[in-house]
Image (cartoon, rainbow, N blue to C red):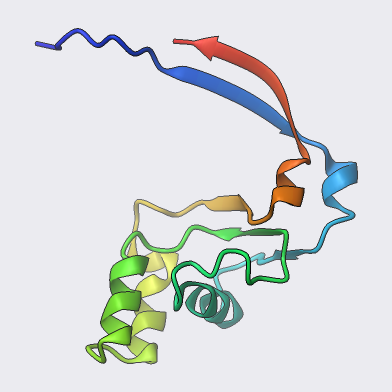
Length: 120
């Protein structure tokens, strides 16, 4: 039995202005490679390192869902970088095998144009 909820979900639909985003500084990872792993590691070793990156956006594979736990274990000396590298690849996690476009800066968000807002 579902309990009544006073809140209704809201679905927001956006399109990306490619002309705008092409002018920004981004990085594109076509595959989950060692360079991809190194990038994720370096950008998450400090609390997500937001604001310290030179990139406005990042495109590439979703990392395995245990990324934060693996980073913490590395910081505590419980695991090696090689173990982190092995466990973060999408092939280790069958659930998260897709790509994402991560908007890292306020500038990158300006490339989004809302096209619909729907209460579900």
